[in-house]
Length: 632
Image 1 (tube, one colour):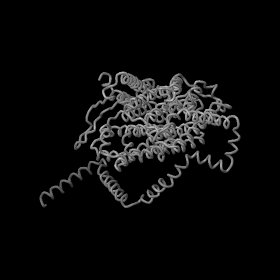
Image 2 (cartoon, rainbow, N blue to C red):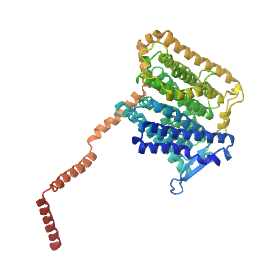
Image 3 (tube, helix red, strand yellow):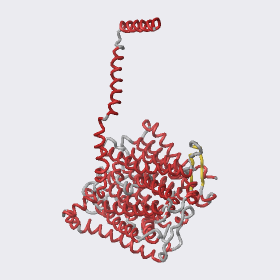
Protein backbone atom coordinates (compact mmCIF):
# COMPACT_ATOMS: atom_id res chain seq x y z
CA UNK A 1 0.00 0.00 0.00
CA UNK A 2 2.83 2.41 -0.72
CA UNK A 3 3.58 4.84 2.08
CA UNK A 4 1.03 3.23 4.38
CA UNK A 5 3.34 0.34 5.23
CA UNK A 6 5.42 2.84 7.21
CA UNK A 7 2.54 3.47 9.62
CA UNK A 8 4.26 1.49 12.37
CA UNK A 9 7.14 3.99 12.32
CA UNK A 10 4.92 6.78 13.70
CA UNK A 11 4.75 5.30 17.23
CA UNK A 12 8.11 3.53 16.85
CA UNK A 13 10.12 6.75 16.44
CA UNK A 14 9.11 8.25 19.83
CA UNK A 15 9.69 4.83 21.42
CA UNK A 16 13.18 4.72 19.92
CA UNK A 17 13.86 8.21 21.24
CA UNK A 18 12.73 7.12 24.70
CA UNK A 19 14.99 4.03 24.67
CA UNK A 20 18.06 6.01 23.57
CA UNK A 21 17.50 8.70 26.19
CA UNK A 22 16.64 6.22 28.95
CA UNK A 23 19.77 4.13 28.33
CA UNK A 24 22.35 6.72 27.30
CA UNK A 25 20.81 10.05 28.36
CA UNK A 26 22.91 10.57 31.48
CA UNK A 27 26.10 10.34 29.41
CA UNK A 28 24.93 12.67 26.64
CA UNK A 29 25.23 16.47 26.41
CA UNK A 30 22.00 18.42 26.74
CA UNK A 31 22.14 19.58 23.13
CA UNK A 32 22.18 15.97 21.88
CA UNK A 33 19.36 15.07 24.27
CA UNK A 34 17.22 17.92 22.92
CA UNK A 35 17.95 16.96 19.31
CA UNK A 36 17.03 13.31 19.86
CA UNK A 37 13.92 14.18 21.85
CA UNK A 38 12.69 16.65 19.23
CA UNK A 39 13.82 14.77 16.13
CA UNK A 40 12.02 11.56 17.11
CA UNK A 41 8.71 13.44 17.44
CA UNK A 42 9.41 15.72 14.46
CA UNK A 43 10.05 12.78 12.14
CA UNK A 44 6.86 11.11 13.37
CA UNK A 45 4.95 14.34 12.66
CA UNK A 46 6.49 14.63 9.18
CA UNK A 47 5.63 11.02 8.38
CA UNK A 48 2.08 11.60 9.63
CA UNK A 49 1.70 14.61 7.33
CA UNK A 50 3.01 12.63 4.33
CA UNK A 51 0.71 9.69 5.07
CA UNK A 52 -2.17 12.11 5.69
CA UNK A 53 -1.70 13.87 2.35
CA UNK A 54 -1.61 10.49 0.62
CA UNK A 55 -4.71 9.42 2.56
CA UNK A 56 -6.64 12.49 1.44
CA UNK A 57 -5.53 12.40 -2.21
CA UNK A 58 -5.49 8.61 -2.73
CA UNK A 59 -7.54 7.04 0.06
CA UNK A 60 -7.04 3.31 0.63
CA UNK A 61 -9.77 0.80 -0.15
CA UNK A 62 -12.65 1.19 2.26
CA UNK A 63 -11.23 4.49 3.52
CA UNK A 64 -9.05 2.72 6.10
CA UNK A 65 -5.72 0.93 6.32
CA UNK A 66 -4.88 -1.85 8.76
CA UNK A 67 -1.36 -3.01 9.57
CA UNK A 68 -0.79 -6.12 11.68
CA UNK A 69 2.76 -6.57 12.94
CA UNK A 70 2.41 -9.75 15.01
CA UNK A 71 0.00 -11.69 17.20
CA UNK A 72 0.39 -10.55 20.79
CA UNK A 73 -0.83 -13.82 22.34
CA UNK A 74 -3.46 -16.47 21.68
CA UNK A 75 -5.63 -18.09 24.36
CA UNK A 76 -8.67 -20.23 23.46
CA UNK A 77 -9.37 -18.31 20.28
CA UNK A 78 -8.80 -14.91 21.84
CA UNK A 79 -5.86 -13.54 19.82
CA UNK A 80 -5.23 -9.78 20.13
CA UNK A 81 -2.57 -8.47 17.79
CA UNK A 82 -0.08 -5.64 17.75
CA UNK A 83 -2.02 -4.00 14.97
CA UNK A 84 -2.59 -0.41 13.86
CA UNK A 85 -5.67 1.05 12.18
CA UNK A 86 -5.71 4.27 10.16
CA UNK A 87 -8.92 6.02 9.21
CA UNK A 88 -9.99 9.71 9.27
CA UNK A 89 -10.55 9.67 13.04
CA UNK A 90 -7.18 8.16 13.98
CA UNK A 91 -5.48 10.28 11.30
CA UNK A 92 -6.72 13.54 12.87
CA UNK A 93 -5.72 12.45 16.36
CA UNK A 94 -2.32 11.23 15.18
CA UNK A 95 -1.64 14.49 13.38
CA UNK A 96 -2.53 16.58 16.42
CA UNK A 97 -0.54 14.39 18.81
CA UNK A 98 2.65 14.41 16.71
CA UNK A 99 2.52 18.00 15.44
CA UNK A 100 1.61 19.73 18.69
CA UNK A 101 3.94 17.46 20.68
CA UNK A 102 6.82 18.38 18.38
CA UNK A 103 6.26 22.09 19.04
CA UNK A 104 6.08 21.41 22.79
CA UNK A 105 9.33 19.42 22.65
CA UNK A 106 11.02 22.22 20.71
CA UNK A 107 9.82 24.73 23.26
CA UNK A 108 11.02 22.47 26.09
CA UNK A 109 14.64 22.52 24.91
CA UNK A 110 14.79 26.12 26.13
CA UNK A 111 12.28 25.97 28.97
CA UNK A 112 14.03 23.06 30.73
CA UNK A 113 17.55 24.35 30.04
CA UNK A 114 19.69 23.96 33.15
CA UNK A 115 17.37 21.49 34.90
CA UNK A 116 19.23 18.56 36.44
CA UNK A 117 16.57 16.16 35.17
CA UNK A 118 16.93 17.24 31.52
CA UNK A 119 17.52 13.73 30.04
CA UNK A 120 14.85 12.18 32.25
CA UNK A 121 12.36 14.84 31.17
CA UNK A 122 12.75 14.18 27.45
CA UNK A 123 12.74 10.41 27.97
CA UNK A 124 9.41 10.64 29.79
CA UNK A 125 7.99 13.04 27.20
CA UNK A 126 8.89 10.69 24.33
CA UNK A 127 7.33 7.75 26.18
CA UNK A 128 4.22 9.88 26.73
CA UNK A 129 3.86 10.56 23.01
CA UNK A 130 4.51 6.90 22.13
CA UNK A 131 1.77 5.81 24.55
CA UNK A 132 -0.76 8.26 23.13
CA UNK A 133 0.03 7.25 19.55
CA UNK A 134 -0.41 3.60 20.49
CA UNK A 135 -3.76 4.51 22.00
CA UNK A 136 -5.14 6.33 18.97
CA UNK A 137 -3.74 3.95 16.35
CA UNK A 138 -4.61 0.68 18.12
CA UNK A 139 -6.79 -1.70 16.16
CA UNK A 140 -8.03 -3.47 19.30
CA UNK A 141 -9.09 -2.33 22.74
CA UNK A 142 -6.37 -4.30 24.53
CA UNK A 143 -3.59 -2.49 22.66
CA UNK A 144 -5.53 0.73 23.20
CA UNK A 145 -5.59 -0.08 26.92
CA UNK A 146 -1.82 -0.53 26.88
CA UNK A 147 -1.47 3.00 25.53
CA UNK A 148 -4.19 4.13 27.95
CA UNK A 149 -2.20 2.94 30.96
CA UNK A 150 1.00 4.23 29.37
CA UNK A 151 -0.26 7.79 29.34
CA UNK A 152 -1.41 7.31 32.93
CA UNK A 153 2.07 6.19 33.95
CA UNK A 154 3.76 9.05 32.10
CA UNK A 155 1.40 11.62 33.61
CA UNK A 156 2.35 10.32 37.06
CA UNK A 157 6.06 10.54 36.25
CA UNK A 158 5.85 14.03 34.72
CA UNK A 159 3.42 15.63 37.17
CA UNK A 160 5.77 14.55 39.94
CA UNK A 161 8.86 15.35 37.87
CA UNK A 162 10.19 17.72 40.54
CA UNK A 163 9.74 15.03 43.16
CA UNK A 164 11.87 16.70 45.83
CA UNK A 165 8.90 18.93 46.63
CA UNK A 166 6.28 17.00 48.56
CA UNK A 167 3.26 18.74 47.03
CA UNK A 168 4.38 17.64 43.56
CA UNK A 169 4.50 14.01 44.68
CA UNK A 170 1.04 14.42 46.19
CA UNK A 171 -0.33 15.84 42.94
CA UNK A 172 1.18 12.95 40.94
CA UNK A 173 -0.21 10.38 43.33
CA UNK A 174 -3.62 12.04 43.25
CA UNK A 175 -3.73 11.97 39.45
CA UNK A 176 -2.77 8.30 39.42
CA UNK A 177 -5.27 7.22 42.09
CA UNK A 178 -8.25 9.23 40.81
CA UNK A 179 -7.84 7.88 37.29
CA UNK A 180 -7.63 4.33 38.74
CA UNK A 181 -11.35 4.54 39.53
CA UNK A 182 -12.17 5.15 35.88
CA UNK A 183 -9.64 2.64 34.59
CA UNK A 184 -11.09 -0.07 36.84
CA UNK A 185 -14.51 0.49 35.29
CA UNK A 186 -12.98 0.42 31.84
CA UNK A 187 -11.18 -2.91 32.30
CA UNK A 188 -14.43 -4.47 33.56
CA UNK A 189 -16.08 -3.13 30.41
CA UNK A 190 -13.40 -4.84 28.31
CA UNK A 191 -14.08 -8.15 30.07
CA UNK A 192 -17.77 -7.69 29.27
CA UNK A 193 -17.00 -7.09 25.59
CA UNK A 194 -14.72 -10.14 25.42
CA UNK A 195 -17.45 -12.26 26.99
CA UNK A 196 -19.96 -11.16 24.36
CA UNK A 197 -17.78 -10.95 21.25
CA UNK A 198 -14.72 -13.12 22.07
CA UNK A 199 -12.61 -10.34 20.61
CA UNK A 200 -11.46 -6.83 21.39
CA UNK A 201 -10.93 -5.88 17.77
CA UNK A 202 -12.63 -2.50 17.55
CA UNK A 203 -14.01 -2.84 14.04
CA UNK A 204 -15.33 -6.35 14.70
CA UNK A 205 -17.18 -5.12 17.79
CA UNK A 206 -18.65 -2.11 15.98
CA UNK A 207 -19.79 -4.34 13.12
CA UNK A 208 -21.32 -7.12 15.26
CA UNK A 209 -22.86 -5.00 18.04
CA UNK A 210 -25.95 -3.78 16.10
CA UNK A 211 -26.89 -7.35 15.18
CA UNK A 212 -26.26 -8.65 18.71
CA UNK A 213 -27.95 -5.87 20.69
CA UNK A 214 -31.07 -3.86 20.10
CA UNK A 215 -30.98 -0.13 20.99
CA UNK A 216 -31.46 0.16 24.73
CA UNK A 217 -30.25 -3.38 25.47
CA UNK A 218 -29.07 -3.89 29.06
CA UNK A 219 -25.69 -5.35 28.06
CA UNK A 220 -25.05 -2.46 25.66
CA UNK A 221 -25.88 -0.08 28.50
CA UNK A 222 -23.34 -1.65 30.84
CA UNK A 223 -20.62 -1.87 28.18
CA UNK A 224 -21.06 1.80 27.30
CA UNK A 225 -21.30 3.03 30.90
CA UNK A 226 -18.18 1.11 31.96
CA UNK A 227 -16.15 2.51 29.07
CA UNK A 228 -17.52 5.93 29.97
CA UNK A 229 -16.07 5.48 33.46
CA UNK A 230 -12.59 5.19 31.95
CA UNK A 231 -13.21 8.22 29.74
CA UNK A 232 -14.32 10.34 32.72
CA UNK A 233 -11.11 9.58 34.59
CA UNK A 234 -8.69 10.27 31.76
CA UNK A 235 -10.56 13.34 30.48
CA UNK A 236 -11.11 14.81 33.96
CA UNK A 237 -14.90 15.03 33.77
CA UNK A 238 -17.40 14.89 36.61
CA UNK A 239 -17.02 13.31 39.08
CA UNK A 240 -13.33 12.49 38.43
CA UNK A 241 -12.14 15.99 37.48
CA UNK A 242 -10.31 16.84 40.70
CA UNK A 243 -6.88 15.60 39.67
CA UNK A 244 -6.33 17.95 36.74
CA UNK A 245 -5.94 21.34 38.52
CA UNK A 246 -3.37 19.81 40.88
CA UNK A 247 -1.53 18.34 37.89
CA UNK A 248 -0.19 21.86 37.27
CA UNK A 249 2.59 20.91 39.70
CA UNK A 250 4.58 19.53 36.77
CA UNK A 251 6.70 21.63 34.38
CA UNK A 252 4.61 23.84 32.08
CA UNK A 253 5.48 21.89 28.88
CA UNK A 254 4.06 18.82 30.63
CA UNK A 255 0.84 20.72 31.29
CA UNK A 256 0.69 21.70 27.62
CA UNK A 257 1.24 18.10 26.51
CA UNK A 258 -1.37 16.67 28.90
CA UNK A 259 -4.01 19.26 28.00
CA UNK A 260 -3.41 19.73 24.28
CA UNK A 261 -2.10 16.51 22.76
CA UNK A 262 -2.34 13.54 25.13
CA UNK A 263 -3.99 12.29 28.35
CA UNK A 264 -7.21 14.33 28.73
CA UNK A 265 -8.27 13.89 25.11
CA UNK A 266 -8.07 10.10 25.40
CA UNK A 267 -11.60 9.88 26.78
CA UNK A 268 -12.96 11.90 23.87
CA UNK A 269 -11.23 9.55 21.44
CA UNK A 270 -12.54 6.43 23.20
CA UNK A 271 -16.18 7.53 23.06
CA UNK A 272 -15.88 8.77 19.48
CA UNK A 273 -14.19 5.56 18.39
CA UNK A 274 -16.82 3.38 20.10
CA UNK A 275 -19.72 5.56 18.94
CA UNK A 276 -21.77 2.57 17.80
CA UNK A 277 -22.01 1.30 21.40
CA UNK A 278 -23.31 4.67 22.55
CA UNK A 279 -25.90 4.78 19.80
CA UNK A 280 -27.09 1.39 21.06
CA UNK A 281 -27.22 2.79 24.61
CA UNK A 282 -29.11 6.09 24.23
CA UNK A 283 -29.43 6.52 28.00
CA UNK A 284 -25.65 6.45 28.37
CA UNK A 285 -25.27 8.85 25.46
CA UNK A 286 -27.61 11.24 27.24
CA UNK A 287 -25.53 10.82 30.40
CA UNK A 288 -22.44 11.78 28.37
CA UNK A 289 -24.16 15.00 27.26
CA UNK A 290 -25.37 15.83 30.78
CA UNK A 291 -21.94 15.20 32.29
CA UNK A 292 -20.33 17.39 29.64
CA UNK A 293 -22.82 20.21 30.24
CA UNK A 294 -22.47 20.06 34.02
CA UNK A 295 -18.67 19.83 33.86
CA UNK A 296 -18.24 22.82 31.57
CA UNK A 297 -20.35 24.95 33.91
CA UNK A 298 -18.64 23.89 37.14
CA UNK A 299 -15.18 24.31 35.62
CA UNK A 300 -16.12 27.69 34.14
CA UNK A 301 -17.30 29.08 37.47
CA UNK A 302 -14.20 27.64 39.20
CA UNK A 303 -11.87 29.35 36.71
CA UNK A 304 -13.37 32.74 37.61
CA UNK A 305 -11.83 32.62 41.08
CA UNK A 306 -8.33 31.31 40.34
CA UNK A 307 -5.19 33.41 40.76
CA UNK A 308 -2.65 30.89 39.40
CA UNK A 309 -2.47 31.40 35.63
CA UNK A 310 -1.95 27.68 35.04
CA UNK A 311 -4.93 26.69 37.20
CA UNK A 312 -7.15 29.02 35.17
CA UNK A 313 -6.04 27.16 32.06
CA UNK A 314 -6.51 23.81 33.81
CA UNK A 315 -10.13 24.56 34.63
CA UNK A 316 -10.63 25.87 31.10
CA UNK A 317 -9.44 22.51 29.76
CA UNK A 318 -11.92 20.67 31.96
CA UNK A 319 -14.59 23.01 30.58
CA UNK A 320 -13.59 22.61 26.93
CA UNK A 321 -13.44 18.83 27.23
CA UNK A 322 -16.94 19.20 28.66
CA UNK A 323 -17.97 20.82 25.37
CA UNK A 324 -16.55 17.82 23.51
CA UNK A 325 -18.52 15.44 25.74
CA UNK A 326 -21.62 17.55 25.14
CA UNK A 327 -21.11 17.16 21.39
CA UNK A 328 -20.57 13.40 21.71
CA UNK A 329 -23.70 13.12 23.81
CA UNK A 330 -25.93 14.74 21.17
CA UNK A 331 -24.44 12.69 18.34
CA UNK A 332 -22.29 15.47 16.90
CA UNK A 333 -19.25 13.21 16.55
CA UNK A 334 -17.36 15.27 13.96
CA UNK A 335 -18.03 18.50 15.89
CA UNK A 336 -16.41 16.98 19.00
CA UNK A 337 -13.33 15.92 17.02
CA UNK A 338 -13.18 19.30 15.27
CA UNK A 339 -13.18 21.11 18.62
CA UNK A 340 -10.55 18.67 19.89
CA UNK A 341 -8.21 19.71 17.08
CA UNK A 342 -8.81 23.46 17.46
CA UNK A 343 -8.54 23.16 21.24
CA UNK A 344 -5.17 21.45 20.90
CA UNK A 345 -3.83 24.44 18.98
CA UNK A 346 -5.04 27.23 21.26
CA UNK A 347 -4.64 25.37 24.56
CA UNK A 348 -1.10 24.29 23.68
CA UNK A 349 -0.40 27.92 22.78
CA UNK A 350 -1.88 29.29 26.01
CA UNK A 351 0.10 26.92 28.22
CA UNK A 352 3.36 27.57 26.39
CA UNK A 353 2.79 31.34 26.49
CA UNK A 354 1.94 31.10 30.20
CA UNK A 355 5.18 29.19 30.67
CA UNK A 356 7.11 32.00 28.98
CA UNK A 357 5.49 34.47 31.38
CA UNK A 358 6.30 32.26 34.38
CA UNK A 359 9.94 32.03 33.28
CA UNK A 360 10.11 35.80 32.85
CA UNK A 361 8.60 36.32 36.33
CA UNK A 362 11.06 33.96 38.08
CA UNK A 363 8.57 31.11 38.52
CA UNK A 364 5.76 33.39 39.69
CA UNK A 365 2.33 31.87 38.94
CA UNK A 366 0.04 34.46 40.52
CA UNK A 367 -1.44 36.66 37.79
CA UNK A 368 -2.08 39.47 40.27
CA UNK A 369 1.66 39.75 40.91
CA UNK A 370 2.39 40.29 37.21
CA UNK A 371 0.73 43.00 35.10
CA UNK A 372 1.89 45.34 32.34
CA UNK A 373 3.74 42.70 30.30
CA UNK A 374 2.30 43.43 26.85
CA UNK A 375 5.06 45.93 25.98
CA UNK A 376 7.85 43.97 27.64
CA UNK A 377 6.95 40.67 25.92
CA UNK A 378 5.12 41.61 22.70
CA UNK A 379 5.37 38.21 20.94
CA UNK A 380 4.10 36.38 24.01
CA UNK A 381 1.32 38.94 24.47
CA UNK A 382 0.00 38.82 20.92
CA UNK A 383 0.13 35.04 20.64
CA UNK A 384 -1.49 34.70 24.07
CA UNK A 385 -4.17 37.10 22.85
CA UNK A 386 -4.77 34.96 19.75
CA UNK A 387 -5.12 31.83 21.89
CA UNK A 388 -7.39 33.63 24.35
CA UNK A 389 -9.60 34.85 21.51
CA UNK A 390 -9.91 31.27 20.22
CA UNK A 391 -10.71 29.96 23.72
CA UNK A 392 -13.36 32.65 24.20
CA UNK A 393 -14.71 31.98 20.66
CA UNK A 394 -14.41 35.58 19.49
CA UNK A 395 -16.59 35.58 16.36
CA UNK A 396 -15.31 35.41 12.77
CA UNK A 397 -11.59 35.97 13.43
CA UNK A 398 -10.70 33.01 15.68
CA UNK A 399 -10.76 29.26 15.11
CA UNK A 400 -12.51 28.57 18.40
CA UNK A 401 -15.62 30.37 17.15
CA UNK A 402 -16.15 27.84 14.36
CA UNK A 403 -15.64 24.72 16.49
CA UNK A 404 -17.42 25.80 19.69
CA UNK A 405 -20.38 27.39 17.95
CA UNK A 406 -20.86 24.23 15.93
CA UNK A 407 -21.22 22.32 19.21
CA UNK A 408 -23.65 24.89 20.61
CA UNK A 409 -25.76 24.70 17.47
CA UNK A 410 -25.97 20.91 17.55
CA UNK A 411 -26.68 20.94 21.32
CA UNK A 412 -29.96 22.65 20.44
CA UNK A 413 -30.62 21.52 16.88
CA UNK A 414 -29.80 17.82 17.16
CA UNK A 415 -32.62 15.35 17.67
CA UNK A 416 -30.74 14.28 20.81
CA UNK A 417 -30.15 17.85 21.95
CA UNK A 418 -32.32 20.10 24.09
CA UNK A 419 -32.77 23.69 25.14
CA UNK A 420 -31.25 22.96 28.56
CA UNK A 421 -28.10 21.41 27.11
CA UNK A 422 -27.74 24.41 24.81
CA UNK A 423 -28.32 26.81 27.72
CA UNK A 424 -25.53 25.18 29.74
CA UNK A 425 -23.16 25.52 26.79
CA UNK A 426 -24.30 29.09 26.19
CA UNK A 427 -23.68 30.13 29.82
CA UNK A 428 -20.36 28.28 29.70
CA UNK A 429 -19.32 30.32 26.65
CA UNK A 430 -20.14 33.51 28.55
CA UNK A 431 -18.07 32.38 31.55
CA UNK A 432 -15.21 31.35 29.26
CA UNK A 433 -14.98 34.83 27.73
CA UNK A 434 -14.96 36.43 31.19
CA UNK A 435 -12.30 34.28 32.86
CA UNK A 436 -10.14 34.15 29.74
CA UNK A 437 -9.91 37.90 29.27
CA UNK A 438 -9.70 38.44 33.02
CA UNK A 439 -6.48 36.45 32.68
CA UNK A 440 -5.35 38.57 29.71
CA UNK A 441 -6.08 41.94 31.33
CA UNK A 442 -4.61 41.07 34.73
CA UNK A 443 -1.42 39.55 33.28
CA UNK A 444 -0.61 41.91 30.41
CA UNK A 445 -2.34 45.20 31.21
CA UNK A 446 -2.27 47.63 34.10
CA UNK A 447 0.72 48.38 36.27
CA UNK A 448 3.80 46.18 35.98
CA UNK A 449 4.47 44.69 39.40
CA UNK A 450 7.63 42.73 38.65
CA UNK A 451 10.56 43.09 36.27
CA UNK A 452 11.10 40.66 33.43
CA UNK A 453 13.84 38.30 34.52
CA UNK A 454 14.27 36.10 31.43
CA UNK A 455 13.09 36.99 27.95
CA UNK A 456 12.01 34.19 25.61
CA UNK A 457 14.35 32.98 22.89
CA UNK A 458 13.41 31.82 19.39
CA UNK A 459 12.94 28.26 20.65
CA UNK A 460 10.03 29.61 22.67
CA UNK A 461 8.78 32.27 20.27
CA UNK A 462 8.55 30.19 17.07
CA UNK A 463 6.26 27.46 18.51
CA UNK A 464 4.09 30.25 19.95
CA UNK A 465 3.83 31.98 16.56
CA UNK A 466 2.96 28.74 14.73
CA UNK A 467 0.24 27.84 17.23
CA UNK A 468 -0.95 31.45 17.28
CA UNK A 469 -1.51 31.43 13.51
CA UNK A 470 -3.34 28.10 13.70
CA UNK A 471 -5.52 29.45 16.53
CA UNK A 472 -6.73 32.09 14.11
CA UNK A 473 -7.03 30.31 10.76
CA UNK A 474 -7.57 26.60 11.49
CA UNK A 475 -11.31 27.07 11.93
CA UNK A 476 -11.78 28.05 8.32
CA UNK A 477 -11.61 24.41 7.24
CA UNK A 478 -15.15 24.00 8.58
CA UNK A 479 -17.32 27.06 8.05
CA UNK A 480 -21.00 26.95 9.14
CA UNK A 481 -23.37 25.39 6.63
CA UNK A 482 -25.42 28.59 6.52
CA UNK A 483 -22.37 30.38 5.09
CA UNK A 484 -21.69 27.93 2.29
CA UNK A 485 -20.77 24.38 1.47
CA UNK A 486 -17.09 24.44 2.44
CA UNK A 487 -16.90 21.78 5.17
CA UNK A 488 -14.10 19.33 4.34
CA UNK A 489 -13.57 18.32 7.96
CA UNK A 490 -17.07 16.99 8.58
CA UNK A 491 -17.09 15.48 5.07
CA UNK A 492 -13.98 13.50 6.01
CA UNK A 493 -15.39 12.42 9.39
CA UNK A 494 -18.78 11.46 7.97
CA UNK A 495 -17.12 8.76 5.88
CA UNK A 496 -16.62 6.68 9.02
CA UNK A 497 -19.08 8.24 11.49
CA UNK A 498 -22.79 8.98 11.20
CA UNK A 499 -23.94 12.54 10.59
CA UNK A 500 -25.80 14.35 13.32
CA UNK A 501 -29.56 14.29 12.82
CA UNK A 502 -31.23 17.71 13.10
CA UNK A 503 -34.65 18.36 14.57
CA UNK A 504 -37.28 19.70 12.19
CA UNK A 505 -37.04 23.39 11.38
CA UNK A 506 -33.61 23.95 12.96
CA UNK A 507 -31.57 24.36 9.75
CA UNK A 508 -32.53 28.01 9.36
CA UNK A 509 -31.70 29.01 12.94
CA UNK A 510 -27.95 28.44 12.72
CA UNK A 511 -27.06 32.05 11.85
CA UNK A 512 -29.28 33.41 14.62
CA UNK A 513 -27.63 31.18 17.20
CA UNK A 514 -24.17 32.16 15.96
CA UNK A 515 -25.02 35.85 16.30
CA UNK A 516 -26.29 35.29 19.85
CA UNK A 517 -23.23 33.33 20.96
CA UNK A 518 -20.92 35.83 19.25
CA UNK A 519 -22.56 38.69 21.13
CA UNK A 520 -22.34 36.85 24.46
CA UNK A 521 -18.61 36.22 23.92
CA UNK A 522 -17.99 39.91 23.24
CA UNK A 523 -20.10 40.82 26.27
CA UNK A 524 -17.93 38.56 28.41
CA UNK A 525 -14.80 40.33 27.15
CA UNK A 526 -16.39 43.70 27.95
CA UNK A 527 -17.29 42.63 31.51
CA UNK A 528 -13.77 41.32 32.08
CA UNK A 529 -12.39 44.71 30.97
CA UNK A 530 -14.92 46.56 33.12
CA UNK A 531 -14.20 44.67 36.34
CA UNK A 532 -10.46 44.04 35.88
CA UNK A 533 -9.25 47.35 34.39
CA UNK A 534 -11.84 50.12 34.46
CA UNK A 535 -13.60 49.52 37.80
CA UNK A 536 -11.75 46.81 39.72
CA UNK A 537 -12.95 48.16 43.08
CA UNK A 538 -16.52 47.07 42.31
CA UNK A 539 -15.51 43.42 42.23
CA UNK A 540 -13.13 43.87 45.17
CA UNK A 541 -15.86 45.43 47.32
CA UNK A 542 -18.19 42.53 46.54
CA UNK A 543 -15.52 39.99 47.54
CA UNK A 544 -15.17 41.67 50.94
CA UNK A 545 -18.81 40.94 51.78
CA UNK A 546 -19.81 37.71 53.50
CA UNK A 547 -21.58 36.39 50.43
CA UNK A 548 -18.72 37.44 48.17
CA UNK A 549 -16.13 35.67 50.33
CA UNK A 550 -18.23 32.50 50.39
CA UNK A 551 -18.77 32.44 46.61
CA UNK A 552 -15.12 33.23 45.90
CA UNK A 553 -13.92 30.44 48.22
CA UNK A 554 -16.49 28.00 46.85
CA UNK A 555 -15.42 28.64 43.26
CA UNK A 556 -11.72 28.79 44.16
CA UNK A 557 -11.91 25.31 45.69
CA UNK A 558 -13.65 23.89 42.61
CA UNK A 559 -17.09 23.49 44.22
CA UNK A 560 -15.46 21.74 47.20
CA UNK A 561 -15.20 18.35 45.48
CA UNK A 562 -11.82 17.67 47.08
CA UNK A 563 -13.23 18.38 50.52
CA UNK A 564 -16.22 16.12 49.80
CA UNK A 565 -14.02 13.24 48.66
CA UNK A 566 -11.76 13.78 51.64
CA UNK A 567 -14.75 13.26 53.95
CA UNK A 568 -16.42 10.32 52.22
CA UNK A 569 -13.35 8.47 50.86
CA UNK A 570 -9.94 9.56 52.15
CA UNK A 571 -10.66 9.88 55.87
CA UNK A 572 -12.54 6.57 56.18
CA UNK A 573 -9.71 4.74 54.38
CA UNK A 574 -7.09 6.37 56.62
CA UNK A 575 -9.18 5.56 59.71
CA UNK A 576 -9.57 1.92 58.70
CA UNK A 577 -5.86 1.73 57.93
CA UNK A 578 -4.99 2.94 61.41
CA UNK A 579 -7.35 0.39 62.97
CA UNK A 580 -5.93 -2.36 60.80
CA UNK A 581 -2.34 -1.30 61.42
CA UNK A 582 -1.69 -3.89 64.14
CA UNK A 583 -3.94 -6.76 63.03
CA UNK A 584 -2.97 -10.43 63.46
CA UNK A 585 -1.95 -10.80 59.80
CA UNK A 586 0.77 -8.20 60.25
CA UNK A 587 1.95 -10.04 63.39
CA UNK A 588 2.48 -13.22 61.35
CA UNK A 589 4.74 -11.44 58.89
CA UNK A 590 6.51 -9.60 61.69
CA UNK A 591 7.16 -12.92 63.42
CA UNK A 592 8.63 -14.37 60.21
CA UNK A 593 10.83 -11.31 59.84
CA UNK A 594 11.95 -11.47 63.48
CA UNK A 595 12.76 -15.17 63.09
CA UNK A 596 14.91 -14.35 60.10
CA UNK A 597 16.77 -11.68 62.07
CA UNK A 598 17.33 -14.10 64.97
CA UNK A 599 18.70 -16.81 62.69
CA UNK A 600 20.92 -14.21 61.04
CA UNK A 601 22.41 -13.27 64.41
CA UNK A 602 22.96 -16.91 65.33
CA UNK A 603 24.64 -17.92 62.07
CA UNK A 604 26.65 -14.71 61.82
CA UNK A 605 28.37 -15.63 65.10
CA UNK A 606 29.81 -18.73 63.41
CA UNK A 607 31.65 -16.46 60.95
CA UNK A 608 33.94 -14.74 63.49
CA UNK A 609 37.28 -15.30 61.73
CA UNK A 610 38.81 -17.63 64.37
CA UNK A 611 40.25 -20.83 62.84
CA UNK A 612 39.81 -22.90 66.00
CA UNK A 613 36.03 -22.25 65.93
CA UNK A 614 35.87 -23.40 62.31
CA UNK A 615 37.83 -26.60 63.12
CA UNK A 616 35.68 -27.22 66.20
CA UNK A 617 32.54 -26.78 64.14
CA UNK A 618 33.87 -29.14 61.48
CA UNK A 619 34.70 -31.83 64.10
CA UNK A 620 31.28 -31.50 65.77
CA UNK A 621 29.58 -31.78 62.40
CA UNK A 622 31.51 -34.89 61.51
CA UNK A 623 30.70 -36.43 64.93
CA UNK A 624 26.98 -35.75 64.45
CA UNK A 625 27.07 -37.16 60.92
CA UNK A 626 28.89 -40.34 62.00
CA UNK A 627 26.50 -40.84 64.94
CA UNK A 628 23.52 -40.63 62.60
CA UNK A 629 25.12 -43.04 60.13
CA UNK A 630 26.12 -45.62 62.75
CA UNK A 631 23.24 -45.59 65.20
CA UNK A 632 20.16 -44.26 63.40
